[in-house]
Length: 358
Image (cartoon, rainbow, N blue to C red; front, side, top):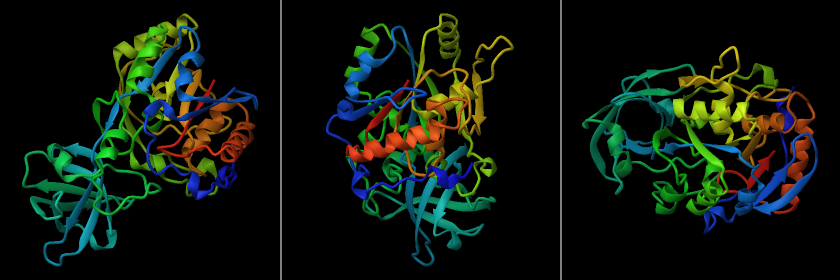
């Protein structure tokens, strides 16, 4: 299957640049699996749309202020650092711009919120095959504890903000209301629509709610760069499935209750988790490289709440597989739904509107 088959036209004005005033105020396109039947609703309607006695799974990963500014103390040259993954205390993998001026051994000084030099320095100790830099921080006990004062929220590149942006609105809204486990460098965006009121109404309806953790990496926004999907290697992301959530899922499956994933990240945890010979999910921590695209099948998840995704992205490929599992026609069904969303003026991407596939 060709990557270019997942391209579509999107007017730039439909890329949401900021969140709505109310988290749950977005639109919701409801798409029925295996068909072209669609409804246009509001996200608050999700409460009544969820199947009776369903189990809703949320990703509780918390976005860290992972974008840092730095300078070369010898030349004054400016750098942008995007932390990707923590290896240990003061030991991180990161993306640096400009990379050509960041060889092994280069020492940089981090800038504070007032753009002045801080006491914290980072030294580049390694460069991997992807061009990512390994950084060792000096001048603090734990760099992670300094990110709130030094860092910016790692908004995706299609959201336009000024250099050195530390917008308080983004700090609050590029984060789910149930975020707990720090580690993501991109938001699990389907969860941004949930307000405390919607979650309370869902629970009041008798819908069980449980959480998983998958720390979203910057690769979630990366386009597929190979011509054939079969040649793409999915970026890895760390996840955890707790005993409590695994037991809830296994109980729901045995009772034939619908399992609804809030976001592609939640879905990837459930479809990646090891299973017993009898099909029961096993709790644990691991790393997933799972790449789902038509004609993939799904063993655990029955419904998916998601956003509208970038052209030629792995997320668009995943939802295309989910809407028609085991078939190739999901691509046409999903691209047709996206074309309708464009005609109807839906807002796209991280701060945009939502879709419920069931």
